[in-house]
Image (cartoon, rainbow, N blue to C red; front, side, top):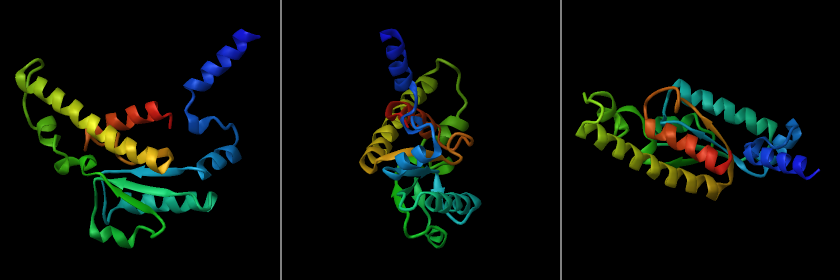
Length: 176
């Protein structure tokens, strides 16, 4: 019936595009025609970089030829020995974390009251920063046909709240 068909189409529109395949092989095929982006604040000699590299290698083993993108605010020189040469690196300075994020100090050290001038100014700066990240990160995601984002510490650590919101907005808008 038309009603059932319309409901099915509406449900498909709400479902993330990368998950529209109900089988693992369908999922692999969809990802094989696109790419995966691993996003974190920076790559260095640390557990995060080592673990992300393991995940990337495992995914390349499951889906040979899968484009992998490491995206961060910074790639420290010492990380080079941990990152495979087949992985594309992309730097967006605005997604740096903690002391390297321009709003970290105002967010976590400035005492303010709700509705104060400082509070309202921070909200505007936060939104502007978020929109800037959405524009830069979103452009890269679209340009490279990335269909899956793997966020590492982005939402679990308050190192860059603008990046957390930007990732949520992008995943909804781009249906990834």
